[in-house]
Each structure stands twice: as C-alpha cells, then as structure tokens.
Length: 266
Image 1 (tube, one colour):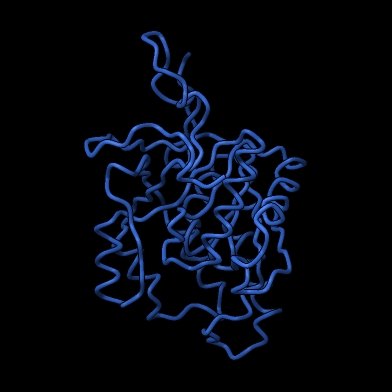
Image 2 (cartoon, rainbow, N blue to C red):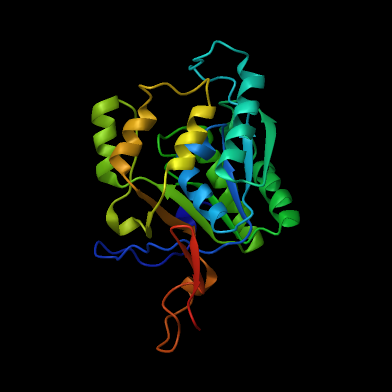
C-alpha cells in the first residue's frame, strides 16, 4: 500500500496546522541512513523523548556510500557509531541498524523491508510511526523506500504514521540556494506546525562527524525552518478517518507541545 492510496482528511489551503504532537508513548522512527534520524527527525524525536516517550529508531542502511567523509574514515563502521551516539543524544531508548546496502533500498522487495518495521514495532509495542514524507525530502530513492515500507507496516498494524515534511516555500528556497532537489508541500498538505527546541538536534548533528561541517546545507535548512517543524499524516489515526459527529472531539485524545503533554477530555 502506497501513501497516495490511503484515505486522509481533505486538504484545504486554509487548514489550521496543529502545534501539538500526538502524545505517543512508544513511537518508532523509520529511516534509511544514519543522520536521517537527526538531520530530519531530530527535533521531533528529541521533543517526544523529552515528554517521556520511549522512542526507538530503525535504520535500514549503514550509509557507507556517502560522498561525504569529513574525517576520512571507514564509513561502514564510523556511521554506525555516529548513529548510536546521535540517537542517545536525542533521547532515543534504542537503535536498530540493519545491513542493507546504501543506495540499494529501492531495489529490495517492499514486503521484506516492511517486515523489518513490523517485527520491531510489535515487541516495542509501538503506538505510532515517524518517517520522512513520501517525497523523500530530497527525492532520494532510499528515503522513499524506507517511508513506503513504514507505510505498509503501519497499515498492517493499524498504526498512525507521521511524515516529516518541508513547506514548499522553504524547499523552493533551498533548491535555488543549493541546487539540491528539495521537495516541499503546500500549506493545504501539511497537518502540523510544531514549535521545537533544536538544542539536542544540533548537538546530535555534530556527532555525525563524517557528514557534517560548518558549511553543511543542514544549517541553512534549520535557519529557514526556524523553531517550527512541519509534518503530515501519511497514515492518519483511525478517528480522523471516521465521519465527523457533532459530539465527537475535533482532535486526537492526547497531544504533546513543547515537551509537555496534555489530555483533551472526551
């Protein structure tokens, strides 16, 4: 099942973005490479962890094919070390790194990739999934494959899935400034605009020593994003798929904002 085949709330250019993250207690973040968990999902993971969630990270590939190697090291081993250090700095309770070839995820059978996420989400008792938007953010085939696998796993398990996304205006600016193929979403395709503290994300980014430098594109992207992260439902909670009732709550039962949790009465 692909993200564009799934029912979701109707998009509207005037949609009010929620500033509150779901208060999942055991989210599973599904990413393709070491540093995706930090450069992309870092502020969300750290905010959920600060609110008391037990976040686990599933990463498919070691990232050994990266064209960056700032410290001229053995990337196969170094990037695993960086991933585990950065995950801990973000507050994740665990990291699972698989052995897929960097750049080869799109060639793998989707059910096989999805089975890894399902196999980890089940004992972890995950109550929600995090991934990149299905654009892959930069269009990277590995990013898209990891997200599609997460969607299939989430659909099989009945779990909601949030995709980290860039607003179209920021992606456009980054394309012009960097020449890299960033892809964003218009306001009507975004569901969350969450205020975040990027301190842990920035600390974790520097732990990816083989991939980061003072002139890295990441810093410009974070500057343009400011203190807000945007996400969209790739698999909405089931309550959002039901017809609205006059007596039904307008939002999920639990929410997290700026590292604190609140419960909305039923």
